[in-house]
Length: 163
Image (cartoon, rainbow, N blue to C red; front, side, top):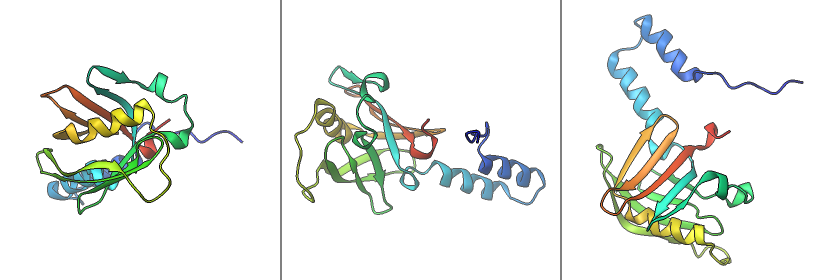
């Protein structure tokens, strides 16, 4: 059996184009559907790269680890942020404006829900970088959290789109 091929254009985008071209969806409905697709709290995000305090962690070095140890980010509509920092789960809280500005009311810290494992350098840098970010931007299947003031940058890939 041949492996399934990924379509070049996501099916949801094709449906929107077809229905939009037929006049069945208004511009407001198209904008709302696009906004839902781009909402950061609607998806799980896997870390692609991280830059903090002059140190960089990039995909070709980072992903020699087991898949389950790959840091990820997810949030909910109440602003709770959770995921794995690599070795341990974390929990925090933030608010996000419509313009993509972030503010952290509870910086992400290792969750005390389970036995805590020793943190790797990646995990320490990840937990240091997250609360420093002050803006979020979705570009296609990527989420970029960053702070221009200290050049902190985290780039994530939407979980369903990682190859």
